[in-house]
Image (cartoon, rainbow, N blue to C red):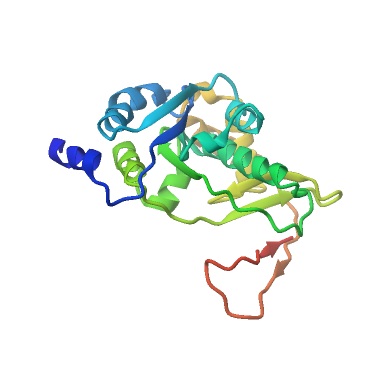
Length: 240
C-alpha cells in the first residue's frame, strides 16, 4: 500500500489537483468526519503533495454561504471536496452552481435559462448516514478509495436537476442523484428533527410516517425529446 501511495506522489501522467478547498461536516452520520480526515484523507494528501484549505462547518448551509461569498476566490482551487453526507454535497453543489450563474449574469430562476457549466471539480468523501451520491456515482462507501480517485484526478459526469416553484418559477434548489416527494420527503424532514439518533433516525422516521398512512397527490408531466441523444447533450430535459 505504501508503494502504491508513493507512486501517486510522483506520477505526472494524470491531471491531478494541486490545491483543494475542503469542507468537513463534523455532525453527519456517526460524527466521524474529522476522524476520517485526520486518519485517512490527510496522510494521502500529504504524500501526494496536495495543499488543502480545510473548513470545519459549524451549522447547516455554511458551506453554501462560504461559496456564495465574493471573498471566496474559487480560482485559487482545482477542486472543492466535502467530507460528509448527501446534505453536505448538496450545499457545495448549490453554492457552486448559483455562484457561477451569478458571475455570468444568468437568471437561474428562469426555468428555461441555459446554465453555465462550472469548470471547477467537485468531490465527495463519504462520512454521512446514507451516502447515496457516492453509491450512485462510484458504487462504494470507502473514504480511502474516494480520496485516491480525487488525487489521481479521476472525474465522472452526473446529471443535475433544478427544482423551481410552480407559481413564480423561483429556484428552490439543485439536486443530484435523487429527489423525493411525499413519503420520502416527509421521512427526511422528520429525521432532521432527531439527528441525535444517527443513521437509525431514518428507520424510526420511516416507520412513524408509514403508520400515519398519509396520502399524497401530485401531477407529473414529462417532456420527451423526439430525437436520439446522448448523456452529453447540452439541451436539458424537463420534468414539470
